[in-house]
Length: 349
Image 1 (cartoon, rainbow, N blue to C red):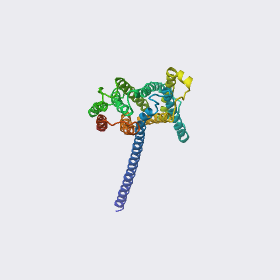
Image 2 (image 1 turned 180 degrees about the vertical axis):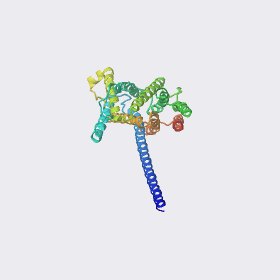
Image 3 (image 1 turned 135 degrees about the horizontal axis):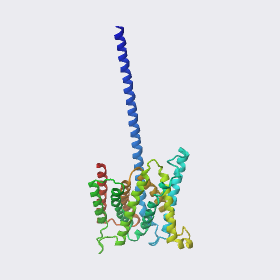
């Protein structure tokens, strides 16, 4: 009897231990699930915020460039404006780093000192962005703000192709179909029924648009590869080195292109309140793009800028008397469908 009683007590004790173990495992599992869920929500909010900011900033970018003109000309030097954009982005990155250092201290992931192997890759995208940004000003001699946003969608095609070549990322058949549809939409939006010319944008404008798309696509994909090569590296450190080289290349551009004008008239000659707004817009757009590349990808970037096309067209109606033609309206719809198809194709991969 005593033996059986002791044995029964051991069974009860073992059962209690198992119950406690199961409860602890369930608690740990629930805790991990909650942590993962919270992390996912934070990441989603971060992606949504930077994508929304990029869309708003990009939609006003073309408008501010056109608005900064006087009698159809830039009274300021576009090379000095680009230099100020890179300087402002560099300053914003340093301020953000200073706040992180005060809060978390200096670590291997947020210190500015680095190796030559890490820094040597930044001059390539910096040089590409220089040429692309200069073309961005000169293309407005041939297109208006809404037309610029339409042609800018060719970035999606170049980005998709370079994504496949450089990052070895496979795109679905739906996404490739979306690229073709996007090209058709951009072309449709440029059709001109009130002139002998079939397209509103002349040949020079198309050449610049295609060159910008290739430069922007390659620079964007290359920059994303650099940024994501070391995921733990603080984005502000990576931005700092990219923008330092950007400042250097733009300083060379000033010396080559506008040295006499800057020496005779001054560095800030022709600047207006709109010019300053444009510089801040470009700087914040650049920061937003880098954030999208860090926490999302280039596809999100180019499609957020495509949505900006719609906002630019609507605002241009009120500011510049832009007329929404049937061709532009239909082209916009086709581009929007292409955006949706590409997003759906991405989710199905």
